Length: 172
Image (cartoon, rainbow, N blue to C red; front, side, top):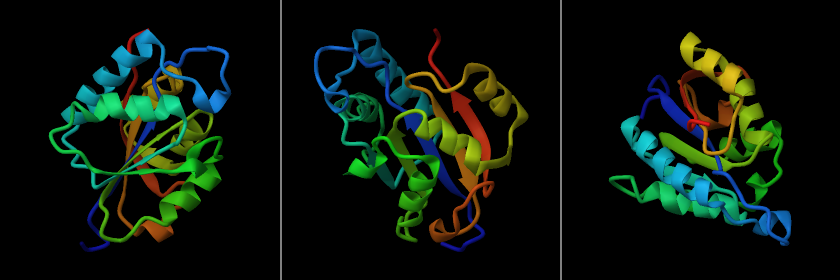
């Protein structure tokens, strides 16, 4: 792959979680979250992006979100459950993405707010005005995702280097 070819990152916030008497890391999805995760999987399939790699937080709600969403995909990408995504800042998430091998073209990251929303805002130096307006208006509710593209290596990914191409959030 030449550096000029576009790479894509999809930043996907976990679906709506429940609040039982467990640690934050162990919180499962709520009923609505399970429905929204499957719908997000269908919407991700509609983007036409063939994911090479999925990076998913180790938290229960992110793993459940990914399990339900990926069932909608025509082909399951390699999945890495990464504990560094949990409670990560945008800078820490960029550092993690910088470790992505050069042969990977499209990455999906399943994580948490405020990190996922912050990362989308930090990376998007340009992009589709409509998608940016929707993301600004809606914020980054549970099960939302943003599609970003950039034309350099993973090691050179930095703030402002990507373009926001699409944004989706479930109906409230």
